[in-house]
Structures are given as C-alpha cells and as structure tokens.
Amino acid sequence: MTRHMLTLHRWLGLVAGVMILIAAGTAIGLNHQDLLKRQTSGGGTQSPYRKYLLAIAADPANPSRLLAGTNDGLFRSSDGGRTWEEAVLPVPAEGAGAIAFDPERPGVVYVALREIGLYMSEDRGEVWEEVPLPFQPPEGTQIAGLSLLARGGLLLATTEGVWRRPAGGGEWHHTPKSAAPAAEESRRVVQLIYDLHDGRFWGTYGVPITDAVSVALIVLVLSGYTLFFVRVGRRNLAGRRTNLVALAAPAPAAPVSEATAGLRRP
Image (cartoon, rainbow, N blue to C red; front, side, top):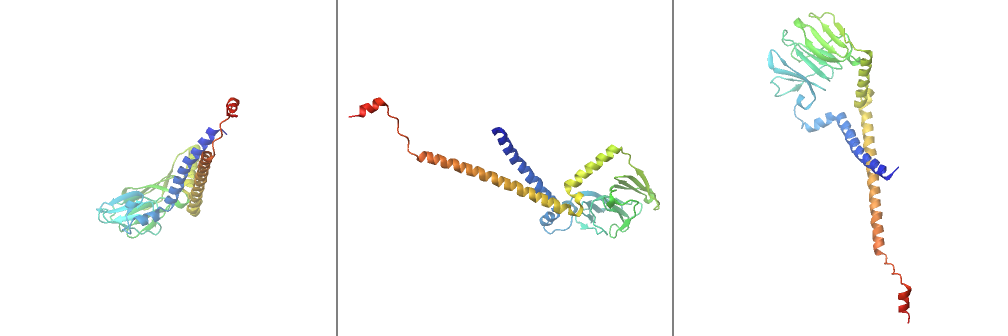
C-alpha cells in the first residue's frame, strides 16, 4: 500500500468515525426521547406540541373542543388548544394517526391507532371502547386513514386495502389493493429495512439491542481516535528528541588538507 493510499485511508477513517458517532448518538437519543422530553418539559402540563403530531380534529358542535393524536398519546382540549390533557384509552394510544367526529351524532368520535385498532367514544372522548374489526392491526394490517360515511358508516384505509362498514353497524366489506407480486415483494423488503433500522424487527428487544450496538460503535470510534492521536503524539515527541540530540551534538572537525598540514609543521 503506497504512502498516498495510507494517508487517504487515515483521513477517511477519521471522517467516517465522526459520522458513526453522530449516527450512534442519535440512535440512542431516539430510543430514549421520552426521557429527554420529560427533562426538558420542566414538569409542565401535558401537550401534543412537544410530540410528533399525527392528526387533529375539532368537534363540529363546539369548535373549541379539540382532539390531537401523536405518536405516543391522544390529547384533548376544551379551550381551542390553549391547555391540554391526555385522553385515557383502554390501551396505550400509540400512533393515533386519524381522528373523526361524527357530525350527525353529537359527542361521537373515532380514533384510529395505526398498529392497535379502532376506538370510539360517545361522550366526546371521556370513555372509549374498541370497535370490532375484521382484521388485527397488531398482526400486520395497519390502519392508515379513517373517514365517516353518511348515517354513521365507516371507511378505513389500511395497508391491505380499503374496508367499509355501512350505516347501522353491518358487515365490513373489503376492497383489496391491487399490486404486482414484484411490487409487493419490494414493499416487504423496504419495510424489513425500516424495521431493522429502527429496531422494530427485534420486537421488545429492539431498544436494548440498538443501544448496545450504538454504545459499541461509540467505544470503537473513541478508542480508535485515542490510539491514533497517541501514535501521532509519540511520533512528534520522537521527532523533537531527535532534533534536540542533533543540536546538542558537537560539530565535526573540518578536514585538514595536506598543504595546510605542511604549513602547520615546525
């Protein structure tokens, strides 16, 4: 390996190390963002503004009454969003990506939790109950959108197509999506990449696994930097010692020619 290649390899390693530190540090931060939010909130009231807001809706009967869905909670306000409180559901309100008030039935509101299910309240969000679905979101078919049809009908957009329930609570009708086998396989590969990236592929062990890998990368990079700079420091110190020895050594005597030696003889 030539000298130029060694120099290029060294500097690429230094730059890549910085990027690895950023990636590993931000991964740990994302895994524990709730802890960071609690420390920076200063003990204030609950609010959707400090979270990843997914959906918001106003009660048609009272526009000051709001519901806001976030990545990890559902919040309600009765004063137009000035103050908020967390709505309590029978399950953790994670991924509340769609909210719909029924304009024909005052007080009725629906919220779709992407990976959990569909819930309904008849008292503007005080008490919630689960709406039975013909599929199980935790098993793969996730809810992407929610809309209300006439006279209480429901329309759900999912990752596997559209589901409709007519007014009166009849049977659900499914319109599957049309996708070529190659496109479907590509979607699964992309989803697998995302799941591996954010740790969801490992389930409940995802956070500790990504934390351990991130810490290992940080230790590896920092130890590499330490070894590099220690080596550079030793090399510079050795160079300085060599220069000092050279300066302290006596200068060699000038050579004496035969003619000059003859003149000096008695």
